[in-house]
Each structure stands twice: as structure tokens, then as C-alpha cells.
Image (cartoon, rainbow, N blue to C red):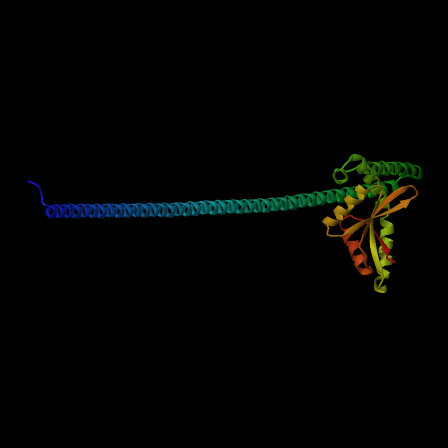
Length: 292
């Protein structure tokens, strides 16, 4: 049975409507799927961005923590280095102070020993001089009781004895060897000591003249020794320094020889006389010279 044209038309319209509905449904479905894909892509992009941001934040946090740890380690290392340097400086300062104190104590001890040795030498010398004087007086008394011929013989023997003693005294003492630094220089000092002793009278006369000029207002200085070598003059200066006397070495020419004179500073005549008497108490002879 054949369909009528009108029915065919309706059937075609129906089929077209169904196709259109189906196409529309498929289009909506495709659009929905596309939207879902876009949303999925957007979510994935956002998640990726969030992850990247989180990783960046985590990395920055880690870098900050590492930098803070490095700064702290550097600061602690610097503090340790500063403390080590400070401890070292303090230790060195203490060691230096202890060394200086030890050197001072050693110098004091050495000075005390030298003073004690000088006092002992002076006492021995004074004792020897007294014994020699007593013996001389005894010999002289015995000689006075002899006949002229015996007296002449005794005086000759006494002169020979004195010459022998003088020669013996010219031998350097341990103190002179110690102060001069060598036996040769000590011999020169010993030989010069005899000349010094012969100048005692001149020193006394100089002191008397100085006392007469005390009130004149003149200035003067003490000549405390004259030597042929500088080391002996420096040795005399060292002895004077121990006694608190400031002095200097003045060089002068005597022909082709250089003379080294030890002189005190310039002072009033009264002070020079007082200093001379004080030094005589320490067996140090001197001459007072007027200052120009």
C-alpha cells in the first residue's frame, strides 16, 4: 500500500525534526564536552600554576632558611674567631706582663747582688787599708827605735814593700774584671786606680776651694774619672747610675790619643761639694771643675 504524499511529507518533516533534535543534542553534548574539557584544562592549568607557585614559595622558603643558616654559621664563626683573637691577645698580654715583671725582679735581684758585692769589696778594702796602716805604723815605730843604719835599711825595705804592695794593688780585682768585661781592660782600670789614689790630695784641695766659693753663686761639675778606653768610662757611669748620680762621657784629644772623661751635670758649687763628699763615702774620688 502506497503512502500518500501528505503522509510522506509529515514523515519527512518528522525525520528532519528528529535529525535536527539529534544534531542539536549532539551539538549540545559536544559543547558540553568542550566546556568540560576547557574547565578541565583550566583546572589543570590552575593546579599547575598553584603547584608552580607552591614550589616557588617552598624554594624561596628553603633558600631563606639556608641563607639564614649560612648567615648564622658565618656570624658564629666570626664570633669564635674574634673570641679566639681576643683570648690570644689577652694571653699574650699576660705573658708579656709576666715576662716584664720577671725581668724587673731579675734586674732588682742583680742590682741587689751587685750592691752587696760592692759593699763587701769596700769592707774588705777598708779592712785591708786599716791593716796596712796599722802594720805601717807598727813598722815605723820599730824603725824609730833602730840605729841610723838600721833605720836606713828598714826604711829601704819598707819602701820596697810599699812598692811591691802598690804593684800588687795594680792587679785587677774580680770586680774590675766583671765591670770591664776583659782582663786587659781591667788591668788598665787597675793601673788608673793608682793614679786616682794619688789624686786624693788634689781632690781635697779642690773641695776646700769649692767650699770657699759656695756663696759665690758659681756653677760647677764633678770630673769622676779619666780613661783611655770608652768601655771603662761606661763602666764608671754604670757605677754612678747605681748610686743615683747622672753623668756623661766627654771625649777629648791628647796628641794622637783619645781621652774619655766622666763628668757630672752642671750644678751649683754647694751641690757639687755635697755630691763630692757623698761619693767619697763610696770610695769614688772626684775633682770639682768650675763651669764657664
